[in-house]
Length: 279
Image (cartoon, rainbow, N blue to C red; front, side, top):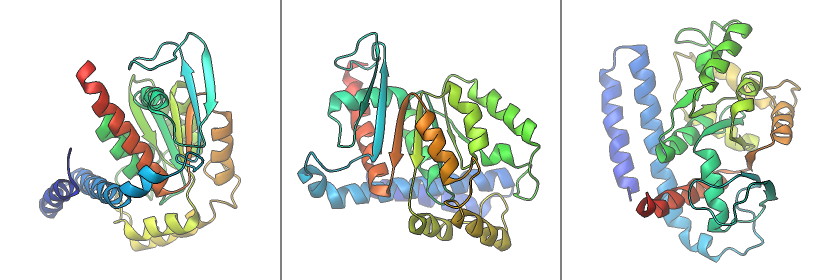
């Protein structure tokens, strides 16, 4: 098992690479890797600090927020109780291991991650990618042209690009843009909504480094826009994401804080380790 110290050491390697980067694409990739390893380190530290609390929680306590597990057909990873029918179960409490395995099956194929700016979608997607070895597609790269936020791509072109990447067999697509995420949902096997309160999103936006050549003014505008997430009625708002979540027919998770997100990843990691001897 990789420790928090080892994750921080990897993050430090990318910090050094950032200093020597010359191309925008290199800078973007190294920064993303640096942040991903730092998040993994923080997750490990949180798990270590809260292990006793996790083991002592009662069965009635909420673990994953709102989770609906759509189990269809026979499960690939030796899951118990599988049949040929589709079964949906609500899981407001921590599921048994036999329920976690079908979650892993769904999340290991094609997952869409939505939520407000600053919720940590990119970091969560990278953590999930590290577990299941599936590529991450950032909707920012499809919504904007070039390496900056100043040139929005034509809507039809952005939708076509989303449809093209979602045609692939395995992926994680993450972003706030509901109108683009909706293009990928017909092929998605799982949906994760990071439904975090504004204080967490605001802290996330203030803590992260500028992305894709964004200026300080871009950061100010993004902060203002993100704060209106609960007031807007567009597909990229709380209302839009809520509709997407309600209408999605397969496995889905509505995570309400970072602890729930960390616990979900921890259970998926445990499931990954548990199935290795059977491979």
